[in-house]
Amino acid sequence: MTFPLAGLLRVRDAQEKVAAEQLSRTTSARRHAEEAEQSAVVSLSEISAQVDDAHTLLAMAAARAAGRSALSDLQTLTELRRAEEEVAKASHVEARRELKGLERLDGAHRAESLKAERHAEQMALDEIAVMRSLREERTA
Image (cartoon, rainbow, N blue to C red):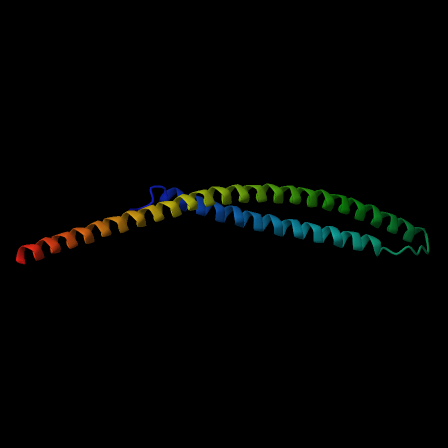
C-alpha cells in the first residue's frame, strides 16, 4: 500500500533542498561581503601617514574619504547579507520541519503497512494449517 501523501513528501523534499541551496548561497554571499569589508579595513590602515607636501596630503585625505565611504557601503552590504542569511536559515528550518513531519508519517505508514501484510500472511498460514489439519483428520 502506497503512502497517500507520497506526492506531498516529494514536494516537501524538493522544497527543503531548494531552501538548503538558498541558505548555502546566502552564507557564501555573507562570507564574501565580510571578506571585502575586512579587506577595506586593511587597505585603510595601510594608507601611509607620511606627508611630504600639500599634494600628498590632499591625495591621502581623498583616499581616506573614499576608503571610508567604501567601507561604509561594505558594512551596509554585510549587514544586508547577514539579514538575508537569517531569513534563509529560517526558511530552511521551516522546510526541514515540514519534511521531517511527513517523513515520520511515512515511516508510521510503512510500519502499519508491514504490520498489515504480516497479519494477512499469518492469517493465510493459519488457514493453510487448519485446512491441512482437517485433511489429516479425514484421512485418519
